[in-house]
Image (cartoon, rainbow, N blue to C red; front, side):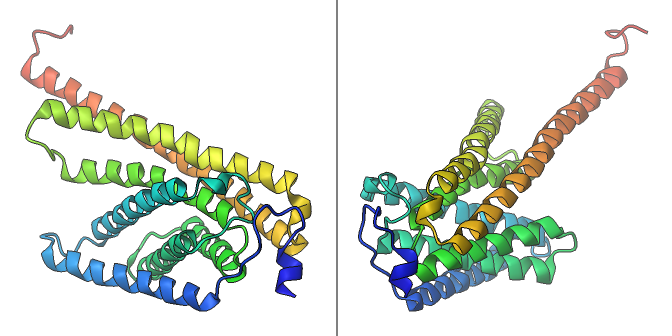
Length: 269
């Protein structure tokens, strides 16, 4: 029955289902990894009470690991681009399960500790986990799940931007600090457009073109999740732009006030 539902005669690669037991093992291993890592950070970090900083640091670590593994997975199997729907291997399977375990950890961590978790944030995590679990359980559509994981490349810049703001100056040279901040800001916007908006567009286009190769229920389910992710990305991008310009305006106001106080002669009355 599973082969009948999740195999199509136009598939380029043979359907080789992977045991869902591995999904549970990999996901739980990832969950415990981040749990232990969180406890380690709390023991070594000076600011032990700031949950948000610990959470963002863990998110940045996950994004860095996931981005590196994502690049490795594409280099190992460039054939994934030939037919993402039917392509599958254990490395990519483990990578998706790794991220599923992290999202489960992050969801529980935010519910327990966050005082400002929005409904949108919870919906995002739940939708992502539902999609990944469906992909892992049926060993189908794994290539497009890997496409979706490329969003973590942008997440790395998003979290690095926040950490840089909290812990700056990171480098001893002010010039290098400013250069690093500019690189992070540029990388943030470029990767946001490429990997958040771009992946949603590619995903919706693929879902339309290959709609006959998907089970109807799975197709509708995936379209809803992809569209929801697109809406959430628009909200996130608007907040990102607003926050960037508000911060620039605030810095300019502080500089103007400083000039007014310290150099009254230089400014016109």
